[in-house]
Length: 168
Image (cartoon, rainbow, N blue to C red; front, side, top):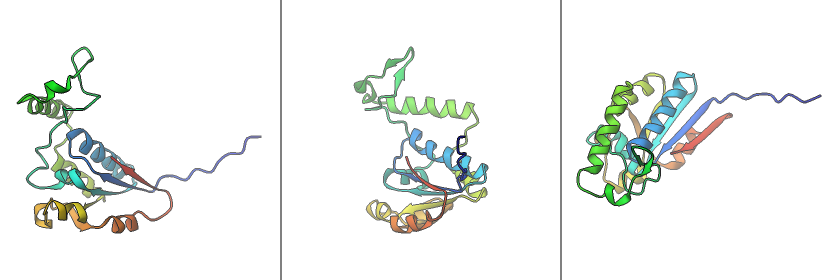
């Protein structure tokens, strides 16, 4: 007879967002929002270029990375030439197209996503090291940011059974 394993449902996700491209930030936001919608505790930690997602002046002006993105293709599945991504206006055009497709799917802008996550009980934190490097203060960040903390502080928040740390 096969022994049945006891399931231990996920209780908490701690998501570290370290990149500032639309596709990276939205991956983090979608996972955090999905967690709170499922009743899973969600804590987000934004570091390095991920801070763009919670910096007031940049959060709704994110771009898609066109240079060196192996998943980027043109119509017909043709690989997107890296040199093409370096031409003036190409990144802005691709970013605008991506934002339009997201709007057509009713995917909210970053600030509204943060509203939804925090309304569901999610917590948003900024990395002290990265904030110091980029000379950012709490007032430069979204009102959703609870605090600017060290990675050690974030790890302390990650404690407990059935917790996952996700790095995007």
